[in-house]
Length: 505
Image (cartoon, rainbow, N blue to C red):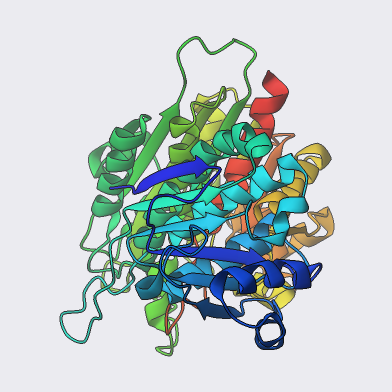
Protein backbone atom coordinates (compact mmCIF):
# COMPACT_ATOMS: atom_id res chain seq x y z
CA UNK A 1 0.00 0.00 0.00
CA UNK A 2 1.27 3.45 -0.88
CA UNK A 3 1.95 5.93 1.92
CA UNK A 4 0.04 9.19 2.06
CA UNK A 5 1.90 11.58 -0.27
CA UNK A 6 1.39 15.31 -0.03
CA UNK A 7 2.66 18.56 -1.48
CA UNK A 8 2.47 21.23 1.24
CA UNK A 9 3.83 24.68 2.08
CA UNK A 10 4.53 23.97 5.74
CA UNK A 11 5.66 20.92 7.72
CA UNK A 12 3.08 18.35 8.73
CA UNK A 13 2.04 18.35 12.36
CA UNK A 14 4.72 16.47 14.27
CA UNK A 15 6.46 14.49 11.52
CA UNK A 16 9.12 12.18 12.89
CA UNK A 17 11.83 14.00 10.99
CA UNK A 18 12.57 16.69 8.45
CA UNK A 19 15.02 16.00 5.61
CA UNK A 20 16.64 19.22 4.39
CA UNK A 21 18.64 18.95 1.13
CA UNK A 22 21.29 21.62 0.73
CA UNK A 23 23.63 22.75 -2.04
CA UNK A 24 27.17 23.91 -1.37
CA UNK A 25 26.31 27.21 -3.06
CA UNK A 26 24.89 29.85 -0.70
CA UNK A 27 25.15 27.40 2.17
CA UNK A 28 26.20 29.74 4.99
CA UNK A 29 22.91 31.72 5.28
CA UNK A 30 20.84 28.51 5.30
CA UNK A 31 23.00 26.95 8.01
CA UNK A 32 22.97 30.14 10.06
CA UNK A 33 19.16 30.17 10.10
CA UNK A 34 19.03 26.52 11.10
CA UNK A 35 21.69 26.98 13.76
CA UNK A 36 19.69 29.72 15.40
CA UNK A 37 16.54 27.59 15.52
CA UNK A 38 18.33 24.50 16.73
CA UNK A 39 20.32 26.39 19.30
CA UNK A 40 23.87 25.63 18.16
CA UNK A 41 26.73 27.89 17.16
CA UNK A 42 26.54 28.72 13.43
CA UNK A 43 30.32 28.47 13.03
CA UNK A 44 30.32 24.97 14.52
CA UNK A 45 27.52 23.84 12.23
CA UNK A 46 29.28 25.30 9.19
CA UNK A 47 32.48 23.50 10.17
CA UNK A 48 30.70 20.17 10.61
CA UNK A 49 28.53 20.22 7.47
CA UNK A 50 29.84 21.15 4.03
CA UNK A 51 26.90 19.82 1.94
CA UNK A 52 29.15 17.40 0.05
CA UNK A 53 27.25 14.89 -2.09
CA UNK A 54 25.40 12.38 0.13
CA UNK A 55 26.72 13.92 3.36
CA UNK A 56 24.17 13.58 6.18
CA UNK A 57 24.18 15.38 9.53
CA UNK A 58 21.53 14.96 12.23
CA UNK A 59 20.30 17.87 14.33
CA UNK A 60 18.02 17.60 17.36
CA UNK A 61 16.14 20.85 18.09
CA UNK A 62 14.61 21.60 21.49
CA UNK A 63 10.94 20.63 21.75
CA UNK A 64 8.60 22.83 19.65
CA UNK A 65 11.49 25.02 18.55
CA UNK A 66 10.47 27.05 15.50
CA UNK A 67 7.96 24.42 14.42
CA UNK A 68 10.77 21.92 13.78
CA UNK A 69 10.32 18.21 14.46
CA UNK A 70 12.50 16.41 16.96
CA UNK A 71 14.94 15.37 14.25
CA UNK A 72 16.33 17.36 11.34
CA UNK A 73 18.61 15.59 8.88
CA UNK A 74 20.72 17.76 6.62
CA UNK A 75 21.47 16.17 3.25
CA UNK A 76 24.34 17.36 1.08
CA UNK A 77 23.79 17.61 -2.66
CA UNK A 78 27.17 18.95 -3.74
CA UNK A 79 27.16 21.84 -6.18
CA UNK A 80 24.23 20.77 -8.39
CA UNK A 81 20.67 19.51 -8.12
CA UNK A 82 19.68 17.86 -11.38
CA UNK A 83 16.60 15.63 -11.06
CA UNK A 84 18.81 12.56 -11.46
CA UNK A 85 21.40 13.51 -8.84
CA UNK A 86 18.68 14.74 -6.48
CA UNK A 87 16.71 11.52 -6.83
CA UNK A 88 19.80 9.45 -6.10
CA UNK A 89 20.77 11.54 -3.08
CA UNK A 90 17.30 11.50 -1.50
CA UNK A 91 16.83 7.80 -2.18
CA UNK A 92 20.16 6.90 -0.63
CA UNK A 93 19.54 9.08 2.42
CA UNK A 94 15.99 7.77 2.88
CA UNK A 95 17.24 4.19 2.53
CA UNK A 96 20.16 4.54 4.93
CA UNK A 97 18.31 6.69 7.48
CA UNK A 98 15.02 4.76 7.60
CA UNK A 99 15.14 4.32 11.36
CA UNK A 100 15.82 8.02 11.99
CA UNK A 101 13.25 9.28 9.51
CA UNK A 102 10.54 7.03 10.88
CA UNK A 103 7.03 6.46 9.57
CA UNK A 104 6.15 10.09 8.81
CA UNK A 105 8.67 12.56 7.49
CA UNK A 106 8.89 15.67 5.39
CA UNK A 107 11.24 16.71 2.62
CA UNK A 108 11.92 20.44 2.74
CA UNK A 109 12.34 22.31 -0.53
CA UNK A 110 10.84 25.58 0.60
CA UNK A 111 11.66 26.62 4.16
CA UNK A 112 15.24 25.90 5.18
CA UNK A 113 16.71 24.40 2.02
CA UNK A 114 18.72 26.71 -0.23
CA UNK A 115 16.98 25.05 -3.18
CA UNK A 116 14.12 27.49 -2.67
CA UNK A 117 15.88 29.99 -4.92
CA UNK A 118 15.31 27.77 -7.97
CA UNK A 119 12.60 28.45 -10.54
CA UNK A 120 9.15 27.07 -9.72
CA UNK A 121 9.30 24.51 -12.54
CA UNK A 122 12.68 23.25 -11.33
CA UNK A 123 11.41 22.94 -7.76
CA UNK A 124 8.33 21.08 -8.94
CA UNK A 125 10.49 18.59 -10.87
CA UNK A 126 12.66 18.06 -7.79
CA UNK A 127 9.55 17.54 -5.68
CA UNK A 128 8.49 14.71 -7.99
CA UNK A 129 11.98 13.24 -7.92
CA UNK A 130 11.90 13.38 -4.12
CA UNK A 131 8.61 11.50 -3.91
CA UNK A 132 9.88 8.87 -6.33
CA UNK A 133 13.08 8.52 -4.29
CA UNK A 134 11.18 8.17 -1.02
CA UNK A 135 9.09 5.33 -2.45
CA UNK A 136 12.03 3.53 -4.06
CA UNK A 137 13.96 3.72 -0.78
CA UNK A 138 11.37 1.46 0.83
CA UNK A 139 12.28 -1.50 -1.38
CA UNK A 140 13.35 -4.52 0.65
CA UNK A 141 15.50 -7.01 -1.22
CA UNK A 142 15.68 -9.39 1.78
CA UNK A 143 12.33 -11.03 1.03
CA UNK A 144 13.47 -14.54 1.82
CA UNK A 145 15.48 -13.85 5.00
CA UNK A 146 14.17 -15.46 8.16
CA UNK A 147 17.02 -14.57 10.55
CA UNK A 148 19.08 -11.48 11.24
CA UNK A 149 16.69 -9.16 9.44
CA UNK A 150 16.50 -5.75 11.06
CA UNK A 151 12.95 -4.39 11.19
CA UNK A 152 12.41 -0.95 9.70
CA UNK A 153 9.43 1.35 10.17
CA UNK A 154 6.76 1.17 7.50
CA UNK A 155 6.46 4.50 5.70
CA UNK A 156 2.97 5.92 6.15
CA UNK A 157 3.32 9.57 5.14
CA UNK A 158 5.69 11.80 3.19
CA UNK A 159 5.15 15.51 2.72
CA UNK A 160 7.19 17.60 0.31
CA UNK A 161 7.39 21.23 1.33
CA UNK A 162 7.55 23.64 -1.61
CA UNK A 163 6.92 27.39 -1.84
CA UNK A 164 3.27 28.28 -2.55
CA UNK A 165 4.05 29.47 -6.10
CA UNK A 166 5.40 26.03 -7.05
CA UNK A 167 2.71 23.90 -5.44
CA UNK A 168 0.40 23.51 -8.44
CA UNK A 169 3.29 22.47 -10.67
CA UNK A 170 4.61 20.10 -7.99
CA UNK A 171 1.20 18.49 -7.66
CA UNK A 172 1.25 17.55 -11.36
CA UNK A 173 4.61 15.84 -10.80
CA UNK A 174 3.19 13.76 -7.96
CA UNK A 175 1.12 11.42 -10.16
CA UNK A 176 4.03 10.85 -12.54
CA UNK A 177 6.46 10.15 -9.68
CA UNK A 178 4.06 7.74 -8.00
CA UNK A 179 3.32 5.81 -11.20
CA UNK A 180 7.03 5.56 -12.02
CA UNK A 181 7.96 4.36 -8.56
CA UNK A 182 5.24 1.70 -8.48
CA UNK A 183 6.38 0.33 -11.83
CA UNK A 184 10.05 0.40 -10.83
CA UNK A 185 9.34 -1.37 -7.54
CA UNK A 186 7.61 -4.15 -9.49
CA UNK A 187 10.58 -4.35 -11.86
CA UNK A 188 12.98 -4.60 -8.89
CA UNK A 189 11.09 -7.65 -7.69
CA UNK A 190 10.80 -9.34 -11.08
CA UNK A 191 14.49 -9.02 -11.91
CA UNK A 192 15.72 -9.89 -8.42
CA UNK A 193 13.60 -13.02 -8.02
CA UNK A 194 15.58 -16.24 -8.56
CA UNK A 195 14.67 -18.71 -11.27
CA UNK A 196 12.85 -21.04 -8.87
CA UNK A 197 10.50 -18.19 -7.95
CA UNK A 198 10.01 -16.69 -11.40
CA UNK A 199 9.59 -18.90 -14.45
CA UNK A 200 7.79 -18.17 -17.72
CA UNK A 201 4.38 -19.04 -16.29
CA UNK A 202 4.96 -16.87 -13.23
CA UNK A 203 6.21 -13.97 -15.36
CA UNK A 204 2.94 -14.14 -17.29
CA UNK A 205 1.02 -14.08 -14.01
CA UNK A 206 3.03 -11.04 -12.90
CA UNK A 207 2.12 -9.23 -16.12
CA UNK A 208 -1.54 -10.10 -15.59
CA UNK A 209 -1.38 -8.77 -12.05
CA UNK A 210 0.24 -5.53 -13.26
CA UNK A 211 -2.47 -5.17 -15.88
CA UNK A 212 -5.25 -5.72 -13.35
CA UNK A 213 -3.78 -3.15 -10.95
CA UNK A 214 -2.80 -0.49 -13.47
CA UNK A 215 -5.58 -0.95 -16.02
CA UNK A 216 -4.10 -2.40 -19.21
CA UNK A 217 -5.09 -5.51 -21.14
CA UNK A 218 -3.04 -8.71 -20.95
CA UNK A 219 -3.37 -11.84 -23.07
CA UNK A 220 -1.09 -14.85 -22.62
CA UNK A 221 -0.32 -17.45 -25.27
CA UNK A 222 0.65 -20.81 -23.78
CA UNK A 223 2.63 -23.58 -25.44
CA UNK A 224 -0.11 -25.03 -27.67
CA UNK A 225 -0.99 -21.55 -28.94
CA UNK A 226 2.68 -20.68 -29.43
CA UNK A 227 3.06 -23.84 -31.52
CA UNK A 228 -0.04 -22.96 -33.52
CA UNK A 229 1.37 -19.49 -34.20
CA UNK A 230 4.63 -20.99 -35.47
CA UNK A 231 6.94 -19.22 -33.03
CA UNK A 232 9.86 -21.51 -33.74
CA UNK A 233 12.48 -19.31 -32.11
CA UNK A 234 10.80 -19.30 -28.72
CA UNK A 235 9.99 -23.01 -28.93
CA UNK A 236 13.57 -23.86 -29.88
CA UNK A 237 15.10 -22.11 -26.87
CA UNK A 238 12.47 -23.68 -24.61
CA UNK A 239 13.26 -27.25 -25.75
CA UNK A 240 15.59 -27.93 -22.82
CA UNK A 241 13.18 -26.66 -20.17
CA UNK A 242 10.64 -28.54 -18.07
CA UNK A 243 8.64 -25.29 -17.79
CA UNK A 244 6.63 -24.43 -20.92
CA UNK A 245 7.08 -21.02 -22.55
CA UNK A 246 4.64 -18.15 -22.58
CA UNK A 247 4.15 -15.28 -25.00
CA UNK A 248 2.71 -12.25 -23.20
CA UNK A 249 0.73 -9.64 -25.16
CA UNK A 250 -0.13 -6.37 -23.40
CA UNK A 251 -2.12 -3.43 -24.71
CA UNK A 252 -2.90 0.08 -23.48
CA UNK A 253 -5.53 1.84 -25.56
CA UNK A 254 -7.43 4.54 -23.69
CA UNK A 255 -11.06 5.26 -24.51
CA UNK A 256 -11.67 8.03 -27.03
CA UNK A 257 -8.10 7.78 -28.30
CA UNK A 258 -7.76 9.85 -31.50
CA UNK A 259 -7.19 7.89 -34.69
CA UNK A 260 -3.90 9.69 -35.24
CA UNK A 261 -2.55 8.96 -31.75
CA UNK A 262 0.99 7.50 -31.70
CA UNK A 263 1.12 3.72 -32.03
CA UNK A 264 4.13 2.22 -30.27
CA UNK A 265 5.23 -1.40 -30.04
CA UNK A 266 7.55 -2.70 -27.31
CA UNK A 267 9.29 -6.06 -27.03
CA UNK A 268 11.16 -7.29 -23.98
CA UNK A 269 13.44 -10.29 -23.68
CA UNK A 270 11.99 -12.62 -21.05
CA UNK A 271 14.63 -15.28 -20.36
CA UNK A 272 13.85 -16.04 -16.74
CA UNK A 273 17.13 -17.90 -16.23
CA UNK A 274 19.94 -18.45 -18.70
CA UNK A 275 22.41 -21.28 -18.26
CA UNK A 276 23.56 -20.84 -21.84
CA UNK A 277 21.95 -24.12 -22.84
CA UNK A 278 24.27 -26.67 -24.50
CA UNK A 279 26.79 -23.83 -24.96
CA UNK A 280 26.81 -23.61 -21.19
CA UNK A 281 28.11 -20.57 -19.34
CA UNK A 282 30.92 -20.71 -16.77
CA UNK A 283 29.60 -21.33 -13.25
CA UNK A 284 31.12 -18.12 -11.85
CA UNK A 285 28.30 -15.61 -11.31
CA UNK A 286 25.81 -17.70 -13.27
CA UNK A 287 23.32 -16.80 -10.55
CA UNK A 288 23.20 -13.31 -12.00
CA UNK A 289 21.42 -14.79 -15.01
CA UNK A 290 18.14 -14.56 -13.10
CA UNK A 291 18.28 -10.97 -14.40
CA UNK A 292 18.08 -12.03 -18.07
CA UNK A 293 14.46 -10.92 -18.20
CA UNK A 294 15.32 -7.28 -17.44
CA UNK A 295 13.90 -6.25 -20.82
CA UNK A 296 10.60 -7.93 -19.99
CA UNK A 297 10.44 -6.15 -16.63
CA UNK A 298 11.09 -2.82 -18.35
CA UNK A 299 8.26 -3.16 -20.87
CA UNK A 300 5.81 -4.38 -18.21
CA UNK A 301 6.81 -1.32 -16.19
CA UNK A 302 6.33 1.00 -19.17
CA UNK A 303 2.86 -0.44 -19.72
CA UNK A 304 2.05 0.19 -16.08
CA UNK A 305 3.14 3.84 -16.19
CA UNK A 306 1.26 4.50 -19.43
CA UNK A 307 -1.92 2.98 -18.03
CA UNK A 308 -1.74 4.68 -14.63
CA UNK A 309 -1.20 8.06 -16.26
CA UNK A 310 -3.70 7.33 -19.06
CA UNK A 311 -1.23 8.53 -21.67
CA UNK A 312 -2.89 9.25 -25.06
CA UNK A 313 -0.79 6.61 -26.81
CA UNK A 314 -1.75 3.24 -28.31
CA UNK A 315 0.85 0.98 -26.73
CA UNK A 316 1.38 -2.71 -27.47
CA UNK A 317 4.06 -4.75 -25.72
CA UNK A 318 5.08 -8.38 -26.14
CA UNK A 319 7.30 -10.60 -24.03
CA UNK A 320 8.53 -14.03 -25.19
CA UNK A 321 9.29 -15.90 -21.95
CA UNK A 322 11.27 -19.06 -21.25
CA UNK A 323 14.36 -20.26 -19.46
CA UNK A 324 17.38 -21.65 -21.33
CA UNK A 325 18.45 -25.06 -20.02
CA UNK A 326 20.74 -27.88 -21.30
CA UNK A 327 18.81 -31.15 -21.00
CA UNK A 328 18.61 -33.97 -23.53
CA UNK A 329 15.98 -32.19 -25.59
CA UNK A 330 17.83 -28.89 -25.72
CA UNK A 331 18.58 -27.20 -29.00
CA UNK A 332 22.11 -27.83 -30.25
CA UNK A 333 24.67 -25.72 -32.09
CA UNK A 334 24.14 -26.25 -35.80
CA UNK A 335 20.38 -26.72 -35.54
CA UNK A 336 18.18 -24.65 -37.84
CA UNK A 337 14.85 -23.23 -36.71
CA UNK A 338 12.05 -21.40 -38.51
CA UNK A 339 10.70 -18.27 -36.84
CA UNK A 340 7.27 -16.63 -36.76
CA UNK A 341 7.84 -14.55 -39.90
CA UNK A 342 9.25 -17.51 -41.85
CA UNK A 343 12.95 -16.63 -41.72
CA UNK A 344 15.28 -19.42 -40.67
CA UNK A 345 18.09 -19.23 -38.11
CA UNK A 346 21.19 -21.37 -37.85
CA UNK A 347 21.99 -21.78 -34.16
CA UNK A 348 25.72 -21.30 -33.87
CA UNK A 349 25.67 -20.75 -30.10
CA UNK A 350 22.77 -21.66 -27.81
CA UNK A 351 23.89 -18.94 -25.41
CA UNK A 352 22.87 -16.34 -27.99
CA UNK A 353 19.27 -17.18 -27.17
CA UNK A 354 17.73 -13.79 -26.43
CA UNK A 355 17.88 -12.64 -30.03
CA UNK A 356 16.25 -15.90 -31.15
CA UNK A 357 13.15 -15.43 -29.02
CA UNK A 358 13.04 -11.70 -29.86
CA UNK A 359 12.94 -12.67 -33.54
CA UNK A 360 9.47 -14.08 -32.92
CA UNK A 361 8.46 -11.05 -30.87
CA UNK A 362 9.51 -8.56 -33.53
CA UNK A 363 7.90 -10.64 -36.24
CA UNK A 364 4.65 -10.72 -34.27
CA UNK A 365 4.59 -6.94 -33.80
CA UNK A 366 5.34 -6.14 -37.43
CA UNK A 367 2.82 -8.64 -38.81
CA UNK A 368 -0.14 -7.92 -36.54
CA UNK A 369 0.03 -4.18 -35.83
CA UNK A 370 0.50 -1.04 -37.88
CA UNK A 371 3.00 0.64 -35.58
CA UNK A 372 4.65 4.03 -35.88
CA UNK A 373 7.54 2.94 -33.68
CA UNK A 374 8.99 -0.34 -32.40
CA UNK A 375 11.44 -0.54 -29.49
CA UNK A 376 12.93 -3.71 -28.07
CA UNK A 377 14.90 -4.03 -24.84
CA UNK A 378 17.14 -6.91 -23.89
CA UNK A 379 19.99 -7.87 -21.61
CA UNK A 380 21.53 -9.12 -24.82
CA UNK A 381 25.33 -9.05 -25.02
CA UNK A 382 28.42 -8.96 -22.86
CA UNK A 383 29.98 -7.13 -25.79
CA UNK A 384 27.83 -4.08 -24.99
CA UNK A 385 29.23 -4.08 -21.44
CA UNK A 386 32.74 -4.17 -22.87
CA UNK A 387 31.88 -1.21 -25.10
CA UNK A 388 29.95 0.98 -22.66
CA UNK A 389 30.50 -0.40 -19.18
CA UNK A 390 27.68 -0.16 -16.66
CA UNK A 391 26.64 3.47 -17.14
CA UNK A 392 24.80 3.51 -20.47
CA UNK A 393 22.74 1.16 -22.61
CA UNK A 394 23.58 0.54 -26.24
CA UNK A 395 21.17 2.14 -28.70
CA UNK A 396 20.75 0.93 -32.26
CA UNK A 397 18.11 2.45 -34.50
CA UNK A 398 16.88 2.55 -38.07
CA UNK A 399 15.58 6.10 -37.54
CA UNK A 400 17.54 9.20 -36.58
CA UNK A 401 14.49 10.97 -35.14
CA UNK A 402 13.67 8.01 -32.90
CA UNK A 403 17.29 7.69 -31.78
CA UNK A 404 17.40 11.38 -30.86
CA UNK A 405 14.14 11.11 -28.92
CA UNK A 406 15.44 8.14 -26.93
CA UNK A 407 18.72 9.91 -26.23
CA UNK A 408 16.80 12.93 -24.89
CA UNK A 409 14.51 10.69 -22.81
CA UNK A 410 17.63 9.03 -21.41
CA UNK A 411 19.03 12.37 -20.31
CA UNK A 412 15.75 13.40 -18.66
CA UNK A 413 15.28 10.08 -16.87
CA UNK A 414 18.91 9.51 -15.91
CA UNK A 415 18.85 6.20 -17.84
CA UNK A 416 21.33 7.13 -20.51
CA UNK A 417 21.82 5.48 -23.90
CA UNK A 418 24.63 5.73 -26.43
CA UNK A 419 24.06 5.15 -30.12
CA UNK A 420 26.18 2.56 -31.90
CA UNK A 421 26.23 1.89 -35.66
CA UNK A 422 23.98 -0.43 -37.65
CA UNK A 423 26.10 -0.36 -40.80
CA UNK A 424 25.65 -3.11 -43.34
CA UNK A 425 29.40 -3.73 -43.15
CA UNK A 426 28.63 -5.95 -40.14
CA UNK A 427 25.98 -8.06 -41.90
CA UNK A 428 28.42 -10.64 -43.39
CA UNK A 429 29.34 -11.75 -39.86
CA UNK A 430 25.88 -13.27 -39.40
CA UNK A 431 25.60 -14.80 -42.86
CA UNK A 432 24.75 -18.51 -42.87
CA UNK A 433 25.35 -21.02 -45.65
CA UNK A 434 22.31 -23.09 -44.72
CA UNK A 435 19.80 -20.62 -43.26
CA UNK A 436 18.71 -17.02 -43.73
CA UNK A 437 20.86 -15.86 -40.81
CA UNK A 438 22.95 -17.30 -37.99
CA UNK A 439 22.61 -16.20 -34.39
CA UNK A 440 26.22 -15.32 -33.65
CA UNK A 441 28.63 -13.08 -35.49
CA UNK A 442 31.83 -13.69 -33.54
CA UNK A 443 33.55 -11.51 -30.97
CA UNK A 444 34.29 -8.38 -33.05
CA UNK A 445 31.41 -5.94 -32.76
CA UNK A 446 29.30 -8.48 -30.89
CA UNK A 447 26.67 -6.00 -29.73
CA UNK A 448 26.37 -4.63 -33.27
CA UNK A 449 26.03 -8.00 -34.98
CA UNK A 450 23.34 -8.93 -32.43
CA UNK A 451 21.46 -5.77 -33.41
CA UNK A 452 21.96 -6.57 -37.11
CA UNK A 453 20.43 -9.98 -36.42
CA UNK A 454 17.34 -8.41 -34.83
CA UNK A 455 17.06 -5.95 -37.69
CA UNK A 456 16.35 -8.86 -40.04
CA UNK A 457 13.05 -9.47 -38.22
CA UNK A 458 11.72 -5.90 -38.21
CA UNK A 459 10.38 -5.97 -41.80
CA UNK A 460 12.67 -2.98 -42.46
CA UNK A 461 10.61 -0.80 -40.16
CA UNK A 462 11.83 2.80 -40.54
CA UNK A 463 11.46 3.64 -36.83
CA UNK A 464 12.81 0.67 -34.89
CA UNK A 465 15.22 0.85 -31.98
CA UNK A 466 17.05 -1.85 -30.08
CA UNK A 467 18.30 -1.14 -26.55
CA UNK A 468 20.98 -3.48 -25.21
CA UNK A 469 20.63 -3.09 -21.43
CA UNK A 470 23.03 -5.88 -20.43
CA UNK A 471 25.25 -3.54 -18.41
CA UNK A 472 22.55 -1.38 -16.87
CA UNK A 473 19.69 -3.64 -15.78
CA UNK A 474 21.52 -5.43 -12.96
CA UNK A 475 24.46 -3.83 -11.20
CA UNK A 476 26.13 -2.81 -7.95
CA UNK A 477 24.25 -0.23 -5.89
CA UNK A 478 24.13 1.22 -2.37
CA UNK A 479 20.93 -0.73 -1.69
CA UNK A 480 22.25 -4.29 -1.63
CA UNK A 481 25.46 -6.11 -0.75
CA UNK A 482 25.55 -7.78 -4.15
CA UNK A 483 24.28 -6.89 -7.60
CA UNK A 484 20.59 -6.15 -7.84
CA UNK A 485 17.97 -4.82 -10.20
CA UNK A 486 18.04 -1.18 -11.31
CA UNK A 487 14.68 -1.32 -13.17
CA UNK A 488 16.55 0.25 -16.08
CA UNK A 489 14.29 1.02 -18.99
CA UNK A 490 11.11 1.81 -17.07
CA UNK A 491 11.90 5.50 -16.60
CA UNK A 492 13.53 5.77 -20.02
CA UNK A 493 10.48 4.41 -21.83
CA UNK A 494 8.13 6.43 -19.63
CA UNK A 495 9.94 9.66 -20.51
CA UNK A 496 9.84 8.75 -24.20
CA UNK A 497 6.10 8.03 -24.02
CA UNK A 498 5.44 11.21 -22.05
CA UNK A 499 7.23 13.12 -24.80
CA UNK A 500 4.99 11.51 -27.41
CA UNK A 501 1.93 12.33 -25.34
CA UNK A 502 2.90 16.01 -25.18
CA UNK A 503 3.41 16.12 -28.93
CA UNK A 504 0.02 14.47 -29.48
CA UNK A 505 -1.84 17.17 -27.58
